[in-house]
Amino acid sequence: MSTQQHKAQTFRSLHQPGRPLVLFNIWDVGSAKAVAAAGAPAIATGSWAVAAANGFADGEQMPLSFALANLSRIVAATALPVTIDLESGYGASAADVGASIAQAIAAGAIGCNLEDSFPADGSLRGIDEQVQRYVQARAAATAASVDLFINARTDVFFQRPPEAHDAAMLAQAVARAQAYAAAGADGLFVPGLADEALIAQLVDASPLPVNIMVGATTPSLEKLAALGVARISHGPGPYLAAMKSLQQSATQVGG
Image (cartoon, rainbow, N blue to C red; front, top):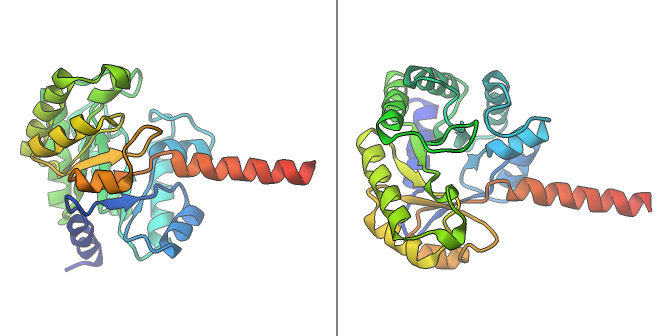
């Protein structure tokens, strides 16, 4: 078994409902080393943070080649499994997404986030179109003999403000989870969802382990674990906190 495949299997085993994998998303080698030194079991990049740290806007404005070079440096700097946030897969077509995934695996990734919205405006792709993107992603992983953990991000809960989240949106998310699971996805990432009752219902209905992103109104980590969540991401939070601390320190020195 290759080292990369072993890392992929280790990463997959960390997704345990009720004992969630907590990922403190990083953006470069320095932040990856800091998180690894804190005892993290795995490393996850966050596309927003990687883009911001390098002068790009989010939404695939950062070239794929740049994102992959950054990934390669991170993989080389840690012995931990590394999963990359690839936004919507950097591809107009499903075949393009498969090619992006193949390149990410070649750069050392053992997992990826792939979202189901258009980078230009955040609107949702049709389920059938998105399914083909996951099919091609899984095919690329199979061809590379790496059991890539494909984290299917659905942006259903980004389409309306949190106070408008309801049972109908939950049903949309479950329908997408079912289709994505059949297409080869391994996890369901639902950024924007913070309502405790809806999270509990999604965990019960989803065929895939559920990933929640920490936000201002998200239940505590302990509560999310009790609800059966399998993965918790911090998204852009660590980068924003680091930059705020840096600015405050610089202000104090300057003052």
